[in-house]
Length: 216
Image (cartoon, rainbow, N blue to C red; front, side, top):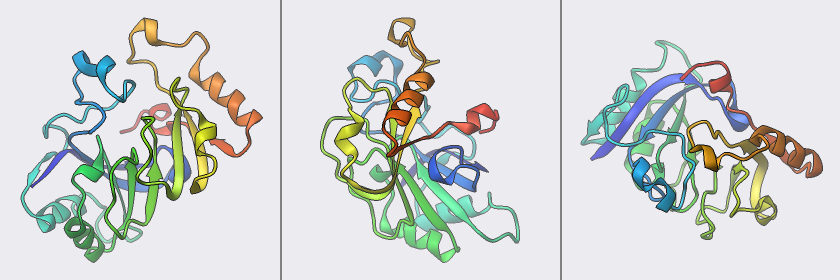
């Protein structure tokens, strides 16, 4: 059984694939936060800006079979168009993504990306791996195509990740708009991230362009 919060077709807004037409499949659930505001400050990840509770979002639901979910997702892609690209996200997609679903999507011609916190093992066959660390625990997924660190995180130093086997390293300013006022840093996260990237050019700036463009 797959529990999907929402699924939609839009442009990738972040990182190396920014601007690419993509289907997003957001799995319900995460291993670093239960999604409830009352538990945010007690969780391993305290700044998440995503609703991943339940299956009541756009095109969300429960799916018993991989082929059933694959057909549901494929229906979101423009008819008779190639270059199919699908991003599994969450919550934490590695809690549910399995070999059967990977095979079903590959049969339909998809290139598959994932956005993961890196704490759970991934199935084989993922074409684009983006790891976004949220906890001090060692990463299970310690290599991939891009490492995207939300910045600043007081407990995570970017320098701790620079030796890992990723093709590209991104810093993404933390969206603090949903945080309590006493949790917002005096200097904007964007300014802090700009300054860090300029001083440490291994890191590139990633902006949430989907928010700037006001799209899903």
